[in-house]
Image (tube, rainbow over the protein chains, first blue to last red):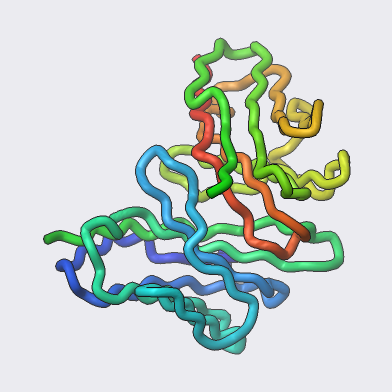
Length: 114
Length: 114
């Protein structure tokens, strides 16, 4: 079983739609969860960072973590064409021999059409 | 907003040659990382670096790879004898205080081995 699984899509939605992006993981040592956005030929841009189960909101973005189910989600409200990008989930453990190594999902390609 | 900068943006090298990829992390950050992304694949962790030492490295980071912080601002990745399979995007990242802090990425160096 892969450590982090993410549906690669592609996902195509109309402008204004609510987008749901998801990742599952198998390593129960993961404690820190991030969502990155990556535009073509650019580096990953940090969108959300959380370390506890529950929801965290930032503008149109909501990150949700369910550690009991090993499942994280990113919701984008009122999606815009400028949200078209690849979305990467990433997570890390801490302690023991781990020093911040991020394990990424495959990335989901999102297109928001006007 | 402070950012991680990487040079060059594209490096073309003959197989067997040495290559050095350069990064300037965010100035007050203490933890530094290199990742790579082969075309169409996940972003993969290579190495983490703190206090002038490697903290953690992946299986990919073999004896052909080395990292260095030659001065107070630069962080470099050296590949001693490049192979065709080293062709990838190489991303540098940094985080502020601890290995459990969010990592900020540069826009990467595209390495092409001929």
